Length: 307
Image 1 (cartoon, rainbow, N blue to C red):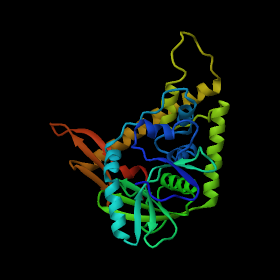
Image 2 (tube, rainbow, N blue to C red; image 1 turned 60 degrees about the vertical axis):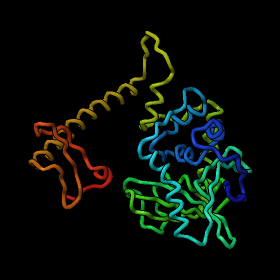
Image 3 (cartoon, helix red, strand yellow; image 1 turned 60 degrees about the horizontal axis):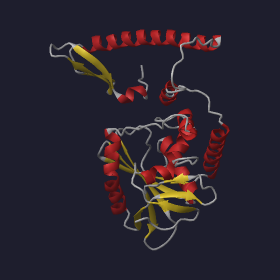
Image 4 (tube, rainbow, N blue to C red; image 1 turned 30 degrees about the vertical axis):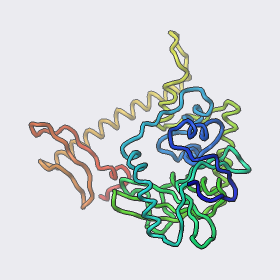
């Protein structure tokens, strides 16, 4: 099923992810919902520079190896869609495909589902997510979703010409929540303008500036390709930035080793450490009982502990 027609887009087709047809609908000088988040620097997986080189064809496109979380997310998508349908018998939930905006053919989107009221009425989108932790997710019923996903949803609404999207998420395999995002014209115009500027920069051969994103470094590692046995005379400020970064890294590593030793010392023989009821770290051990590694709790990187 492809679902009902929408106001501002045409259906390109229903393609299985990873197939040649799916790749073709997303390749070239077009922008998808996930790429819109990349362009404005909101993707944890790709950077503007890495996407630019993909679009420009100056290096092989990023090969994203599906993680276990991604594979389970794909498997659970129809299950979560069924739960949403059960929770809302007043609507019909339709599978759909890849759409292109009628006015801007380069603006593409592949929403997870389209929702229609059973007795008629405005269409809405349904975006389906899974999350290991609840970080970035607000109270159910609000519009407080991680900013990367909000960006994707706003782009999808703008592409199809719809006003409302529901986000259904399963957190930690048991916490089902729903959120509602209403189209924001200012956000839509911002994303649209930035995307158009990005495509123009590809046409002009002007890449975005460097940044500290891991994907940017991976991209630069593969450019320009090949090595000449010569000496490059680089600018002193570039060299100094590199030198200072190495100094800062050494100091940070020393600080981390000291802090890790302090935590292990305070733990004694305990397997796990907490501070005021909040999880801090877990130790792994060798066969003789000595510590192999101290593993910080994932939330420790995003939640500051009170003194």
